[in-house]
Image (tube, rainbow, N blue to C red):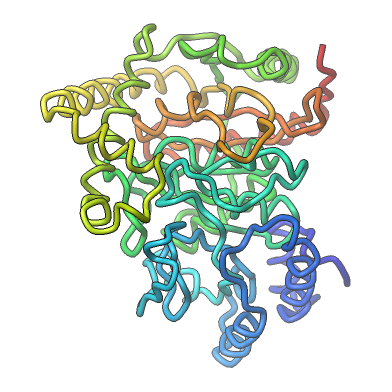
Length: 431
């Protein structure tokens, strides 16, 4: 069987578990694809095919038969990997080789997964772009900061990659690259060994081909259910345009509204509601927290290696230094208030529907796009899933963001799986 690299995680795992294919066949196909596309795409900071085969030989010897046995995984280059460079996208750490794995990496290895390589990230997972190109249009951004992870899964290099989100660093690149992206509820997974930026916001995430793939990874990392059970009754969904709706372009607005009409025609209840203050105060609270905590996380680098930092990082640090402790606490307080209010929202709805990004990936590589439609949900610590749905007028991916209740990630995945199946029949024609 050829082109195993093009299969979803769930599908290829089933073939390996059943003995239909051997992990070595999958690894060979993934490596061949990486070697074919990497020069143009630049998804990987570090890639060593011999090292991947060495890992495979070891897991074969151990005889691990978990669902991730022999599966190559992309690891965002802010996550420590023993014996392999972890650069954080920074000139300061370009030669840093940690002695131990991040907890999430260790868990994947224990399950028999293989580190395919370190995927490109922006500097310290902030805004200064890495080298990765958009897999659909090389002169367009792939998004950030988990750019390499999203692009590698999109280009069929690997079936799974890890990312993190502090503002929109999983959902936005998933949208721009046209893959399924998932940001967990804040605190769901250990971030030990992951370069921290803002402790109240940083969250682990995954890039996969299909929603059902998420259960395999969650089961490995946390013991969550390995299969998706259908929701009982009709899905109750709500469209949330947010105070920033006018920042979405016409094709993104049309897609969201067309998707809602399509879902309503397939027995999914759709309402429209507002969440949060209408003046964008929640968005500003996220920006305040990110700057205040980020400047303190990078204080040593700023003090000792300022000449090796980008202007973007230095501006953030200096902005954070000007933010008062009182303003920071007020932002935390507002976030806490609305985190509690969200509980009542999810008494009435199973899932919220909102844009993942303002539109198709912008042209140019000097920016990673705007996280305006992600900041609030990161602040509120809720789980988010990007579903790729269609292509916009420029032939680049468009999709929708689905939001679930805090620590009800499995319920969100169940709803997203059903919505994914309904949208398989959806056709989008931009006006």
